[in-house]
Image 1 (cartoon, rainbow, N blue to C red):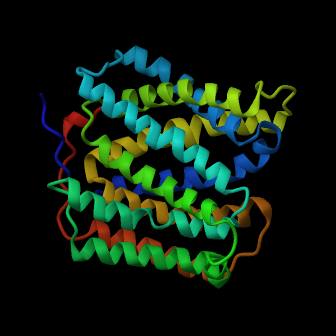
Image 2 (image 1 turned 90 degrees about the vertical axis):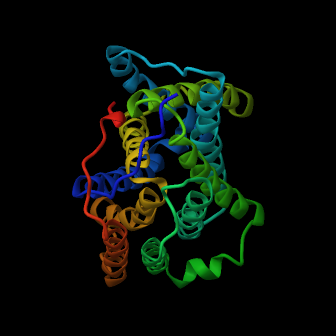
Image 3 (image 1 turned 180 degrees about the horizontal axis):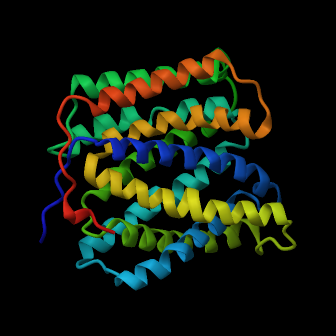
Length: 308
């Protein structure tokens, strides 16, 4: 059995890909606002995951689809698909019905802390260091500035179950991220297989909980669904798997801090919301956290084991 790919220090390209992944994920919230009124949350998750699978499938077939070599690998991939796609998509959609966006962003922002602890416990080469701890604190401080005091006050109100659901989704993402490095499969084909398994699970769930698929969708909703399937689901998952395997989940998870920052920025650009000094300060803190995380060791060359 081949060894788990060794981690390397992040390069400038890695940092760029982290920024791109966060921006793509943040843009998903805009697309969701267009689509969810007509599709509902569960069918939205099923459709976007299914489209992401169809986008990646031709490339995976062209490269030669790689299948798990053992029952252990099948179990890891199945568990990763459930924890990375099925459960968090459903929990976030449900929690978003009762929690303000700022509170939801704040609760999801604990992900890097959980990733830092989890990576330290279950891996030998992605350990807790003072540099990583400082980078996480800087990033979380940026989130606090973006969501503001009202979000902190909002933690005391609303449904406790919804808050636990958001925290549960964050924990699912972290657990799935820790599993990815144990799976011996190139990133694109791993993403394709995970999305296929996610689609197979979400469609029956949607049928049972929401009835027949939505029909008569508007052009804006169809466009939003296609965008969600191609970019935040298909492309972003390839980038996620590639970065976790090469620089480690504790470093990659710092990009989570950028999602609420970019979300507010997209509101300024697309929805015409005002640009505030708090947004600029938050972005500076998050970028400082990424800079601290990437410093220290001289970047090494990528290994060939992480090819698509």
